[in-house]
Image (cartoon, rainbow, N blue to C red; front, side, top):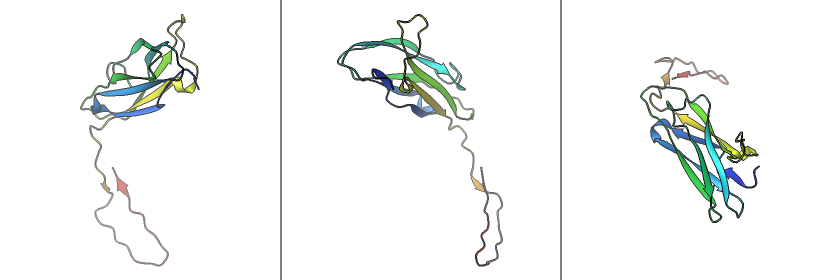
Length: 142
């Protein structure tokens, strides 16, 4: 864990039609902190599925939390759930490394609700004969 700065939640889920996701950063020390926040591509595509971010921020000594909104793109095409990552980094280092700790990276899952499908039974009718101690399977399909 990072003792200075972390995400409030390590996994966010958002529906595609929500328009944005808000990630929350917590500060654990009583000092001013300069940090970077950036999105990292997963199977969600930047600019198609979400607006990528890469910003440097400062949390003042009096601040304990900061929220950052990331725009989520909505379309009318059904797709499986997609993920991308958001991480905190040190903007003062040349290669801008991610801050240490498992809690300095979060995953965002975009849930597509465009065509959830239809749930029904595999057959319209099923005939069952009663026998003690026996069960039958009833198949549900999407």
